[in-house]
Each structure stands twice: as structure tokens, then as C-alpha cells.
Amino acid sequence: MSGWIRNITVLGPGVRGSRIAGYAAGRGFPVIAYGLAAEAVPAGVRLSTDLAAATREAHLIIEAVPETVSAHRDAYASLAAVAPEGAIFATTSTLPPSDLVAFTARPDRFLALRLPDPARQADLARQDDQARQDGQAGQGGQGDIGEGAAEIMGTTATSPTVLRAVARFAADLGLVPVERRDGTTDGTTDATTDDGARSASIDSLRPR
Image 1 (spheres, helix red, strand yellow):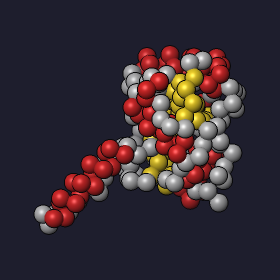
Image 2: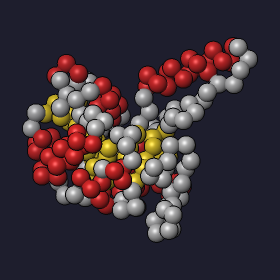
Image 3: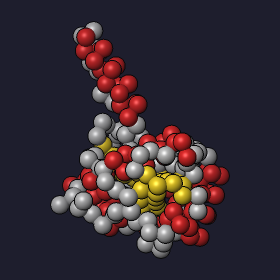
């Protein structure tokens, strides 16, 4: 593993959190899950019912709570009280990270990290296969993160060092890091804010 992110905590009760935890554990990362039912914990993942213990040694805390503002607000209030000062918070929410950053108490170490959905990618592959058989163009994942890609979306406050660290983590998962500007959903890769204050090309985010 090329980056300093090693210990992962996944926070969230559903299928998304379970998949992310299992994916990272399968790539050799030590992963602790908080909020999962015991029967939903993937192989290689430790389950904790104590948030302070679950996050004590975390370098990256991936939040996968339900898609409501109140759920995110409550999750980050709890995390801010116990998580290590240097830990990075990453949301998997489809909400723009700028809508959530105020809840985190660490704007420089907060971003969105969206990993491919294996079920969605399999469905797109089936659709593309059928389209090719019918002599039509496939969807190719239009509007979605491409297969094998990890979407990274910071805010204007996110540290470039944090962006690079999470990009290296994504690469260590076997994924290609793709950065989008906060608020875009059209697949455009743009790593520069409107005023040019934060400039980091996607090439600079790739592991060296």
C-alpha cells in the first residue's frame, strides 16, 4: 500500500456500508464497522458497538448513513466528539459535500468518496451486452461512476493533501481516482475551484 491511510472505519447500518467494508477488507485494509447488524458484517471486518473504540486508530472514517441531512448531522456530531483529530471523514452520500461540511468540525479533512456499486455495474454490463447484440450503442455507465473508478469530491476547504491521500487509498483499492467539482453530476472531471484558489489536476491525485 502506497499511502499513509491504513486503518479504516465504516459507519452505517445498510448494504452500502457493508459492501464498502467488505471491499476494503478484501484489499487488505484493517476495517472496523460500526452500526452494522452482526449478520451483515463481511468476512475480515471487525464489528464494534462502541464508536470511540471503533474510531480510535482510524485514519479514514467512511460514513454511509441514510440519505437525510439529519442523519448526517447526528453522525458527524457523534464522530467529532470521539474521532482522532487527524482522521479524515469521507461521506458516501449523493448530497454535495458542501451541504454537509458544516457538521464535521474539520472542513479541511472532509470530502465525498463514492465507490462503484457492484450490483449497478453488473446491471450496466448486462445492458451493454444486450445492446451490442441488438446492434445498438451501450450505455457505458452514462451518468454513473465508471466501472473501476472512485469519485472524489472535496469542498473549497478540503486540503489538497487530504485529496491526494484519499486518491492513493482509492488506487490501493484497485480503483482509478476521479475528482469532480462539488455539485457536478455530469461526469466532468474538474479539480480547480472557480477562483483558482485550489488547483490540483487529476494527474496530481494519482499515486506516484
